Length: 322
Ligand SMILES: [Zn+2]
Image (tube, rainbow, N blue to C red; front, side):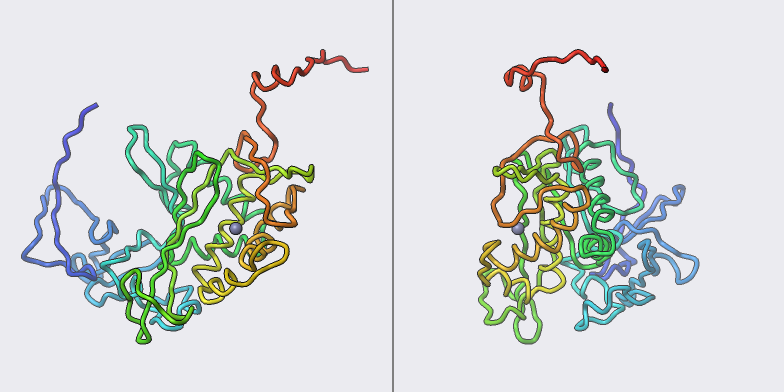
C-alpha cells in the first residue's frame, strides 16, 4: 500500500500554544480542526485556536492556563490548580491528561503507543490487549484499595507519565527519571547533587512488562500472574510519583523480610491484595521465584506446549466417566 500525505495545515506556536499568526498556513477547503498538542480547537467561544479541548478540561493557549481546576490539585500544593504541564511546556506535553502509555510496534514494525483509559480505541495488538486486561484486572482485584487508587491516579494525572514497554526476558522492572530541584524549585541539570529527598521530583517512569511471564514459588507455595507482578511495579511508580521523599527514604531503609521498606510497601500494599483476589501465591520475602509461561496476563496457570507434555511423558487419559 502506498499513501501520499497531503498537507492541509501548518502552524508555529509560542511555547504555551498561542498561535504565531505570521507563521501559519491552512488549506481552507479542508475543515481541519486540530491544533496545539494535537487537540481539537474550540473556536466558537474565544476565536481561532485560543481554546483547546483536551478531553478532560478546556485550555486557553493565550493564558497558558486551564479554564477549570485540576481534579488532583491536592497532590500539587506548590502549583496553581490552573497550571498547564507544571508551567514547563518545552519538557512536558499533555496528550489528554491520561498518562499510562503502552508502547508497542504496529503492523509495519513502527513505534506506536496507546494511552490507557483514553478515548482512542484499543489497537489490534496482542501486547496492548494483554496489558490493558492486566491494568483492568488490577483495578478490579484491588478495588477500594491502593492498587485501584494508583492506576486511577496515574491515569488521570496531568504531569506524571508511566510508560509500559514490552519485555521479552520476563523481567519486570521500573525505572524512574528523577528531576532534581534547587531550593527555589528550579530544575537542575541531570547529575547535579542535592542534599535532601525533598529536592527531587519524579514525573516519569517506565515498566518493562512481559504479559506471559508468571512467577512460581520454588517452595511450592503457588504462583503469581503477570498482572499481579505488574501491580507490584505500579506500587513503586505510585510511591515515586506521589510521595517522592518517602519513596526515596524507604529505598534506604533495610527490611528483614523484603530487603528494603520500598519492597515491603510494593509487595504488601499492591501485590498481595491483587494476589489474594485469585488465591495466588503471597510472597513472604523478595525472592523472585521461577519464571513460568502463561496463556494470558491475568492467569497464573502454566502454559504447557505439546512438546513439554511429551517430554514430561504424560499419559493421555481417555475421557471416561464412571
Ligand atoms: Zn519491587
